[in-house]
Length: 438
Image (tube, rainbow, N blue to C red; front, side, top):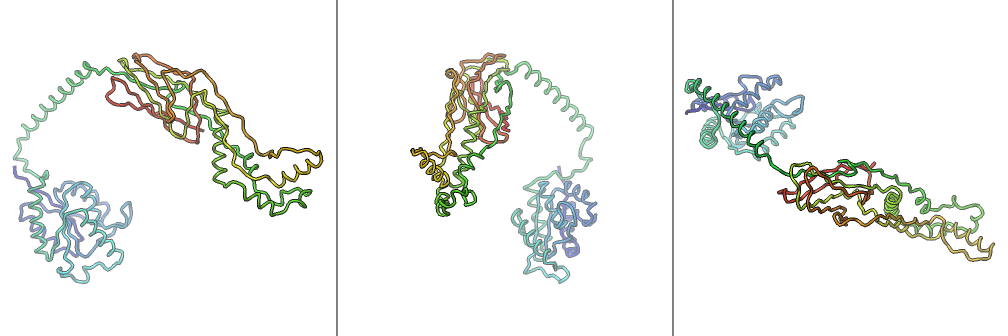
């Protein structure tokens, strides 16, 4: 069935009037339909809807570029580009075949009034040409006759290789027969959909549906202790003469203070110590005990079940009998102020007092003890908990009660992942569990 095609011609207008007419005549001689800006104002933004609809209904898009960039859009998201470039971008977005033709700068005769004078528009024109060269098959024309011939050749190739919907005379169709066929096809489609739904219902897949709850919930909220580092900051504070008591100023020199200050650890080491101490105090005073519950809400038993609960690196997990040790404090010299008072005290009581700074403290070790973890679940050093089960009946649950603790390393919202594997699953099923530390 013979088709007729609609070809949209896009270009700047006043400088290419004759070239556009030649191209239109060439397309008409092929018994096809040319269409372009002659039928509407391309500079009128209110007409853009008509332009879009016209491009949508076109089968091919012919772009002609010479020495003008064209009228600039004054507002909106595409402010600053020309209407010609806007049309081109829209045609590309609609996947309409684009045939681009660029004027040969060495051969095409041109008058000054047809050359872009604005420097900014010149730059935009050069960029536009590069974009067209990079994204489309292009051809170069040397005269309006050469342009018309090349458009005809390019369109003939496209019509042969890249078939488009086109237009067909209505009297070539039997409208009533076509409508009857459509109605019959719709009836068949509805009947097949009903049969398919019935088959799905009768052959309902039997599978376990596994779910993990932590403390009877599918999300968690953990307390996060603030960093209480005033004691640490005081212990590692730099000393100045203003901090030296009056009675010691005659014995303590600035050199002594400088030597002491130079032995203090760098700020990065102190920052790490503060974080480690905060984490230790969190684990010592506010560990978050958890219980795990595995549920099978499906319609079939799960066999040879393996579950791995993987916690994010920001949330540490341990067995509840984990023994925590306080981090080692960074080393530093002895304060000249402390040394002054120790020396004077020795002289007064005539005895040796072991040199220990009252600012240097070691925190007691926290012990968390409970019964051994059962064989069916175990803690992995990679910050995860594994559960192995021979089977879990549908409609049943299995619990690991109060055997593990969580300790947040950072404040924020994170995700744990629960990986389910069993004989009935073809691939691993993953459940996300939100954890908020605040």
